[in-house]
Image: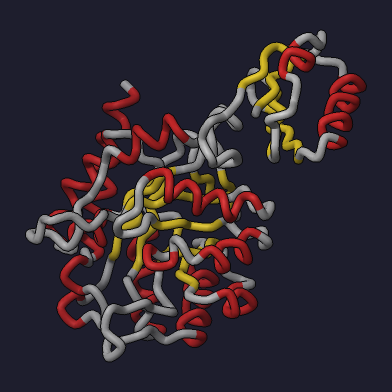
Length: 334
């Protein structure tokens, strides 16, 4: 349930209402937007007398939210969430490029790529230290050494870093990581999500391979219900009957999620297609349909990459993508 307050509502009366609601066993989240203030009520609201609340002189309207996700719901938070990561803003019409290799392989590799993607327009460096792989015999990442190299690349370029976490026990290792990524395979690892909800780190939540929008948003809700409101959603392709591409990129997710939630929506065309030559057109389409950014895999030598080389762009190809996307964004605004 949400209680929409009138403009210039008297703060003393707002506090009295808030205290009364909390005494009913409800959790009250106050959201102050550009045009209105909303009290979001979480808990059992079935016994709340909406007519009584709506009759108060500080209340404009009371709405019940039927969806099971509350914190992530746009009805709860009408304005777009903008997440500030060391001065880099994500969401609210600010388009960002996340770029870097699938996995960190060496100091020279990650620093070289970090410099190249920054020069091409990326503001956030991605790179895998812990790698979930289908085969137990595949390269699993450099782990803690990989994290150290990512932090060195951050120091070298000034770019915030995003990297994937595999287990809640690893959270202390991510103390200096700017954005913690939850991969598709862990989207419904609810114990991990709850622990991440107790941190103050932005969480980059990828969609599960076969997950619906509601399941995805409920995973975001697990994080937000613990107090961490800084969630970024990432569509990375879903599993369908099609075999020509690695996954099927669901761009419908962008406008649909924009209706359902206030959280930023990023597109990962690299994992969706699994084919490097498909990344550019899918990136252009993502920009055209209103995404808040792109996560793209970039490698200086894709043919010899230890992980996902076939889907990685070379730095010069990534530069072509960023230039094309900027033209599309400009055309949309005009």
